Image (tube, rainbow, N blue to C red; front, side):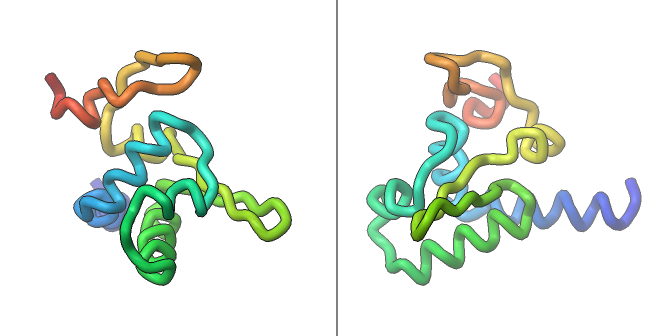
Length: 107
């Protein structure tokens, strides 16, 4: 594995190591695109702390953003996540379920 690939893997796993960011990824995996406000309601932390988490996930290539007016929406980059964590193809209602290798530890 080359050094760039190692750096990418470390960046992704560091992003996922934080419980808040891990939960954000799970929510996006299950629900698809979510607005900043939707995510903020789920976490009892300040806006600046949420912004910090979003930035780390975005820098790791795990999420992308879309702006519509003053609203910001986040979407999981499943292809990027799949490079490091195998996901099952199971879906419920068109969205991935949390019952994947990612959430079940490979069981």
